[in-house]
Length: 262
Image 1 (cartoon, rainbow, N blue to C red):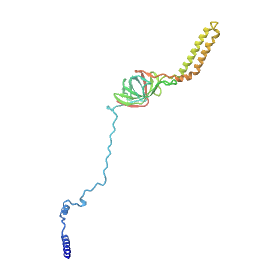
Image 2 (cartoon, helix red, strand yellow):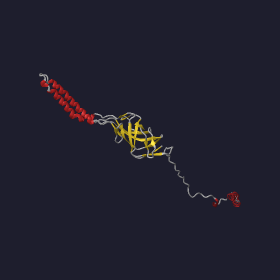
Image 3 (spheres, one colour):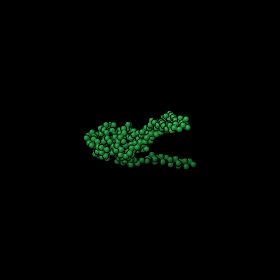
């Protein structure tokens, strides 16, 4: 047993001695340092700030005007137009309508805008005849001109339509409340006159002369009922319709100075 312990002790001492005498091979590390010189002073410097993306302005699309020419329409200029289609109170809101200039007109620069120049507008509001004798309505906004095929916006108001004055761009049907009241009263008056004629004929016959007052009483009742009830009955009647045929003349007036392309 002592021999075995002695053998293991000798082996342990031998291994320690061999380890102490072993030299590590560092030649590869030295070669890398000489060839690449890994000092910090030779390394490239990192940028101190992070570059930011530059802002690029997108150019605005210019208005379509290939000729580059502009003309000024003076405020207050009156222009006569001719409608291309029928205009009535059954047109829906947003419907497009078109016109052409009946006569030429002059710009501020002295250029003559010829007859036939196209104008376009929109139905802003509309309704058919309503109860209480209210007539139909068509509200127009004529706000585009096409000179040499180039569109420009203009500010106008419709002042005349079909030889009738127009206010606030509203083409109105005839309001007939009071006329309907008069019609009711007239019906009562006609009924009374008819009974009066009957009573006069009855008075020519002695046998029925005594009853000649009866038709007069009936006629008076009918007349009184129509006279009293006419304001109420007229509420249930409708006014006139708006119907302007194609080829009708309109007059518009510029509400502001307008620059048009062309």
